[in-house]
Length: 87
Image 1 (cartoon, rainbow, N blue to C red):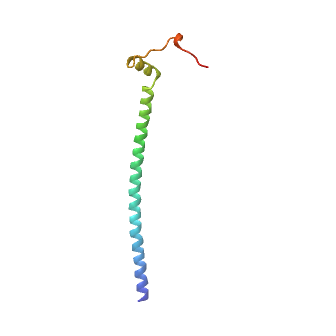
Image 2: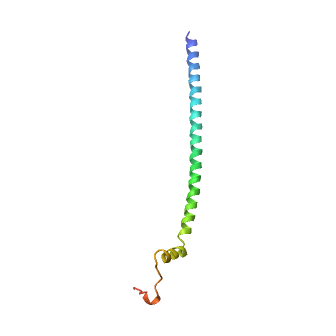
Image 3: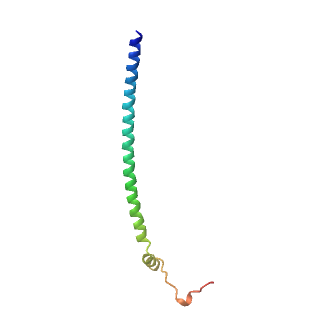
């Protein structure tokens, strides 16, 4: 009787261990899929960031800023006679 109880307890522990293993592997796979999704999102965001930096550099070139200042704001560069140097 005692031997049967021990065998049943060992079988129950083995079954519980197998169920726990399956649950842990499933959780691991779910987390791995989430990790891959986050990596893909990061790659897309890095690519978008690079495009935005390039666009900003294009829009902020000195020639473009000067053209906008002349056309939109009617600004002109001062003559040398109008420039006062402070020391």
